[in-house]
Amino acid sequence: MNEFEKLGVDAQLTKAIQEIGFEKPTEIQEKAIPLLLTGTRDFIGLAQTGTGKTAAFGLPLLQLTDPSKKHPQALVICPTRELCMQISKDFISYKKHKAGIQTCAVYGGASISEQLKEIKKGVQILVATPGRLIDVIDRKAIDLSHIHYIVLDEADEMLNMGFREDIEYVLKHTPERQSSWLFSATMPPEVREVSKRFMKTPHEVTIGKVNMASSSIDHQYFLVLHSNRYEALKRLIDFNPGIYGLIFTRTKLDAQQITESLVREGYDVDALHGDLSQPQRDKVMARFRTKQLQLLIATDVAARGIDVKGISHVINYELPDDPEIYTHRSGRTGRAGLTGICMSIVTPKEKSRMDQIERFVKAPFHKLDIPSGTEVCRKQFFHFIDKMFAADISHGEYETYLSALKERFENVDKEEIIKRMAALEFNRFLQYYENAADLNIRKEEKAGKKKDKFKKGGEPGREGFAKGGKYKSLFINLGQKDGFYKASFLQFVLDSSNLRKEVLGKIDMKNLNTILEIDSASASKMIKALDGKMYKGRKIKMNVSNQ
Ligand code: ADP
Ligand code: MG
Image 1 (cartoon, protein in one colour):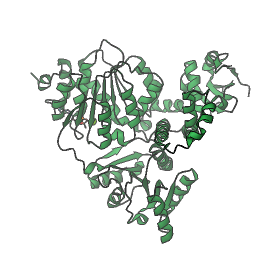
Image 2 (cartoon, rainbow, N blue to C red):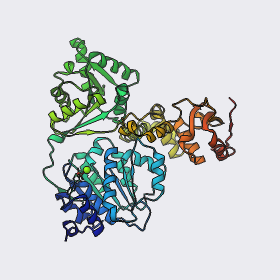
Image 3 (cartoon, rainbow, N blue to C red):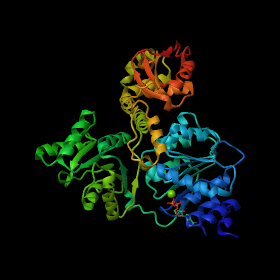
Image 4 (cartoon, rainbow, N blue to C red):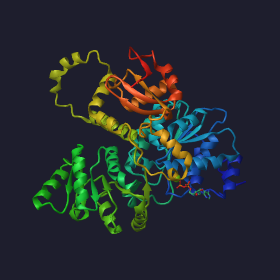
């Protein structure tokens, strides 16, 4: 009997992994597979990268999946697009001799309509990154009611990246979950907390030493074009609402300019550079220490000797030349047993320097995606709600106004109050990010011709076409006053007409109405779907505009 079969792996799966060249199970596979195959036990597997975790959860998952049922039965959630593709590729090779199991990879930065189509065809196992998964759930494109198994792969990474709310949301909304399996290289407090809240007496297995010391700083990097550096920085800040950190630049001028721009855009930041007099410097430092400033933008020289407790993030706006300076920078976070994050914005040209620094630091660096606009908005929204619940209402003075307020709110339902509250704080993010571009550099974009085509279609409104005869302009009597943003409006017309985003061109949204460019061939379908229909009690008018 083959070693894998002894663990309970069935003949078809065993055959496939033998063909791949797995002769005997790795340690984590040996410990995890028999337990996971029961399907009912929660499990935590702590093991370094390269120990074979994918097969440790993949084989049991494929074996537990019922090929006769076509609805989603399992979710694998992992931090990055690359990992998502890798896992799904591995699954495809494991299930080579198993019929009737469909898996699908769902990740950001690629066409969601293609992914939705694939889900619709009937998949049982979804491998997803948190942001895109939520997107898919929001669009009601996936039925969570029969999800039996959830795997959180690289849980520590996902939490470091700020996906806690998304993961908890999924765990809360899978009522038929029979077991959850969490895999991680380290066990920081955040991971422990999630496991405590959502797992029932998990069986925990640790392979080798889970190294806490070297993992107190998580090194992350983001590959972007030089021209997107500032925009990328802003996304990273916005995606981490509670950030308390240092941003390092190479030059004094950069420090000043970034500071000016961020201040203009409403961030609580200031610069620390060599030109400041001692009293000026003390003043800035005092404001930072008392957290009136969230971020300090500094050059290496100016940051010398700064010792501030509780810094959550160090961001390298640009990498330093000298790896040793990198360690000085990153060492400002992750102190006194707390975990810290050091993020670097890296251009393709700087990649070799990044690798050199990684070798010097002797810790793994994680390449992560710059969050999408939607992910940032979602994050901000939850942060705002958290803040609302944390607000101190113990003063009691509010009682005085309560009766008057109650009257005012008499006919307003809870949902509307939530929306209005959020809108007050949150609209600026929605507006800013509604058409936000993907800032990540994707390898495939350079190579594939097909991808180019998709890219153009995927970004309506950026090309300013409409000059040729290919597009028609449609007038519609809905606009901002109806509560639409461009993004929500697009969603609405596409959902109503069952057309694809690719058919649309520019949108010009006014307060009372909107002009929408659409591929001539699809115009009548759009009009038919919308004209004369009701929206919030008002009749929609849509026709070809002669503007
Ligand atoms: P992890 O998720 O723990 O980082 P992976 O699952 O990505 O590790 O596996 C790392 C490498 O080891 C992969 O190339 C995989 O194909 C290989 N591998 C996994 N299990 C075995 C095995 N039992 N025998 C030989 N190679 C294996
Ligand atoms: Mg892995």
